Length: 418
Ligand code: SF4
Ligand code: SF4
Image (cartoon, rainbow, N blue to C red; front, side, top):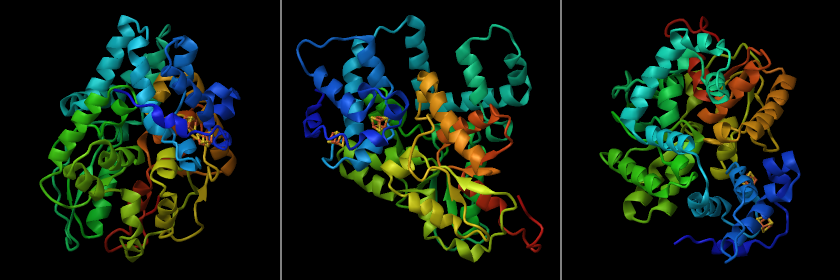
């Protein structure tokens, strides 16, 4: 039974409207949180007018959490949007191909084996030159062209099962590393840099041989049963010890911590309490003792919506970067805003997604930054593609990758730079 009754908490004050990225783009009340809550309320009425417009305005929500973070009435907007999408899913008219693509996409990220195969295929596709060749084909379908554009550089793709790696100077205990679905396929360099940095700090890093996606993609896309199954599997995968579970993508951190509220039970609560975003963990890990070198390039930070609005830990990112000598990196989006990645949004809503990405890319170019740091893989992919469209040679990295690069080389502290 779907519960949209919490929509009644909305007093229609409109204080959330200036914070909503889609309302900022379209200026349409139906693309604002207040408008969407009215649409959700209509879903519960007898005579609902099921229309493409109704689906579109709900689909165009980014699930960015900006409205929920500032709502004075405590409207649980994210949960309501999840519920609303479950309600409308059976009413959609999807073509056979659309249904197949949706099922395949959600299925691949739910399966460690599927992820492994996808990672290997994408790695080969990128490194072999097929990627560049395909791009030159005339009449390439727009979706394939888009996927090609978003596929990160070869150094980041590929799937490798990290072995449990003993730290050379292990002295501070053990931690678990949650790889994530997109992270394990598209962002190996962040996982490897995180492992090396944690080892340098004296931790043993355990990486489970295989674990599925956190389930956020399924929860936000009308597949709550799959999301729950994935949560159960993750609880089992990480039940072998009580050590912290560290996560390098803020969207995954948010979902894993939400297990406590989503799935009742002691195991879910205890697991969620162990989950920490890597930046939160590093903020109190004594990084200054590592004596990092100063970055040679101008560095700026783009803060993902999940880090700001859902985790509420934006200060951790800036605090961690204080361990770097030199000028503190500038925050590109101090006033919020979204890059338009938002899980599957960058594929399902190409037009709005691109418009949002262009806005952030313009700010980055204006800042003169040569390296952009961001804490979510989806945002990194989106920004990289948006900057490449400007032929800008700006690196987009997770902060841990930069930190690991700036560790002094053993026995030769002054030789390593970015
Ligand atoms: S969601 Fe919250 S902030 Fe937005 S209109 Fe409703 S009560 Fe006001
Ligand atoms: S979650 Fe984000 S995009 Fe969706 S209504 Fe709220 S502020 Fe707007």
